[in-house]
Length: 138
Image 1 (cartoon, helix red, strand yellow):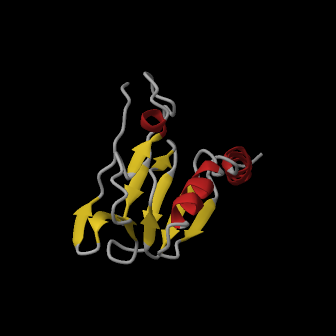
Image 2 (image 1 turned 60 degrees about the vertical axis):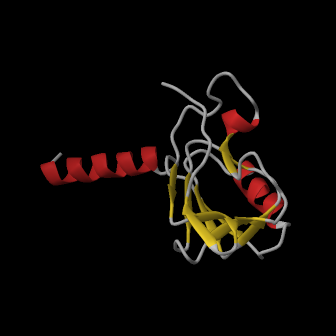
């Protein structure tokens, strides 16, 4: 076997081994209505380890969104994807880890998540960078 054919064989084997290691893209399209709360939680809840969860448009929520570990959460842009709490909801957390929402004393999801290009706000005119409650340790 020549060096080129061995290299090709190794590349093909690696491609087959890791083809399932990368997750799917899960698209959640918000409508700027309180039904976005269940759409977000359902989309996240149905996702799998390694998935990229893409959140599109502005979201209006009246409940906590549970973030599960080992996922990437990404919006269209910081001004294009805004998650806003509906007036008077008075949520303890807008976004929280699955450990926090289940009130677990240990980390439910042991893997880290990546969050980018999202703005979270309690007021339509008050934009804040993303803050989420997370409970966990290594």
